[in-house]
Structure formats: C-alpha cells, structure tokens
Amino acid sequence: MIEVNHLTKQFGKFTAVNDISFSVNKGELFALLGPNGAGKSTTIKMLTTLLKPTSGELFLNGYNVVKQQDSARKSFGIVFQDPSLDNDLTAYENMELHAVMYGVEPASMKNRIKELLELVELWDRRANLVKTFSGGMKRRLEIARGLLHHPKVLFLDEPTLGLDTQTRNLLWNYIGHLAHEKEMTILFTTHYLEEAEANASRIAIIDHGKLLTIGSAAKLKQDTHTKTLEQAYLKLTGKELRDEEVDPHEAWRARQRSRNMR
Ligand SMILES: Nc1ncnc2c1ncn2[C@@H]1O[C@H](COP(=O)(O)OP(=O)(O)OP(=O)(O)O)[C@@H](O)[C@H]1O
Ligand SMILES: [Mg+2]
Image 1 (spheres, rainbow, N blue to C red):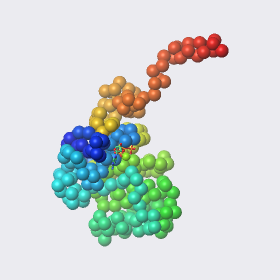
Image 2: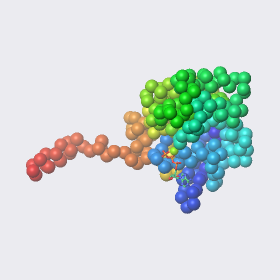
Image 3: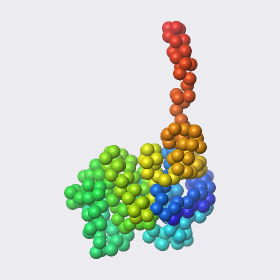
C-alpha cells in the first residue's frame, strides 16, 4: 500500500533523507522511529506530496505520488506534527471545513463528525472556539479530523505528543481498530517507544536520513541482543547511556578511592 524506493531529499547541500527504501502492507500499523532531525517528517511530507523528492520513487495505493498527485492525495489522511487547526473557528466548524475539502458525503457528514468528536470526547465542546482549547484538546481534535474521510492510508506524525495516558490509550485502541477491522494502512512516528512496541507490527529506525533497520520489535531486540525496544533503539542510534556498562564492583572501588582521598 505504501512503497518507498531509494528516496532521497536534499535541502541545498544537506541530505535530510538518504536513499531510504521500505514498503508497508495493507492494514499494517507501521512505525517510523528516530531521533530529532532524523528525517521522519521529511519522509512523511514527501509521501503526502508536500515536498518533492530529490530522487527516488514513491507509491501510495498504487499511485505514483509525484506523477499522480491528485489520485495519491485522495488515498490518504494526515495528522501533522505541527498544529494546523483554525483557531478562530469552533471545533465543529474545523471538522466541517475539512469534511467539505475532502469530499465527505454530505448525507453521512453530520453523523461522522458526531461519532469522531464523541470518540475524542469533544462533542460537548463542539461549539467552542479552538483558541480556547488546551494543547491536548487541540491534538484530539486534529486526530479526529484526520480520520474524517476514512482514508486508505493514514499518516500520523507524533499523534500523541503531549497527551495524557487515558487519551493515548483511547486513541491507540481506535487506531488499532481502524487497522485491524477496516484494513486501513497506518504509518506513524512517535518518541514514545512503548507505543511503537505495543501497536506497530513493524518498526523502521532512521537516523541522519539513513534507514538503520526494519522489523518487528522482537526482531530488533533479537538482532541487537537487548531486552527492551528502548535499549535496541539506543544501541542502534548510538546514544545509549553508558551507566549500565559500568562494572558495579569497579564503581564501588572508585567511590572508596575518592572517599579515601578526602
Ligand atoms: N525545509 C527545510 N529546509 C532545510 N532543512 C530542513 C527543512 N525541513 C527539514 N530540514 C532538516 O532536515 C532534517 C530532518 O528533519 P525532519 O523534520 O524530517 O526530522 P524528524 O525526524 O521529523 O525530527 P523530529 O523528531 O524532531 O520531528 C533536520 O536536520 C531539519 O533541520
Ligand atoms: Mg518530525
């Protein structure tokens, strides 16, 4: 459903995405992980026609994303990393505007908006201006909006950033339902590794624009001889804390030495 072949993006002399290839199957929940600046959002922007690749090929739902932009656009929904709501409209108006833009059937539009606003528990606040919402409420509204037109492919760039545990659980239950029951293909990024482990069937890790590895959480742990996904991630991205590698006896002796010196 998503195919990325030798994708590269350069900004001037800087290479943000460097020869990345992977594919995602229909109904798969796929995570793209990597440190800040790794190239995750840039990859999603190219997949959603917002940026043009420097080289490489992209296919969505069988359409060439560069050459068949309009058809590709009809195939996906997106929740951006950066807020993109209209603050001077109410929650309901933001939903309505998006529904019209994405051609949601007028007959089912009202029910659909109600269903989604209820899901993110904003139905009671539907008539309030978005500028009066908290950060978490805005995030919930953005996610509801991204789901409006039942897209075949859904891109979620850090969908749960700044949300409380209750809301995160609620959203992941719903996202899992979309993938498993509705066969929606979902590619998401997150810095919460436990979300990737709990929800993604496969995980790709990128750093400095390069794809380091791809596979299930179990495979990543096995390949790196680690016990948790976080350890695997830190080992691969080379930023692990060194404390764990210190021999406890050596640490104790070092403490004794410094005590004796006093
Ligand atoms: N329009 C642009 N012009 C120049 N450089 C850019 C542009 N957009 C992104 N970059 C650079 O490309 C690199 C990748 O950025 P990107 O936003 O894809 O990272 P990310 O993996 O999404 O990080 P984060 O976890 O912080 O969201 C960064 O070094 C960023 O500064
Ligand atoms: Mg990003």
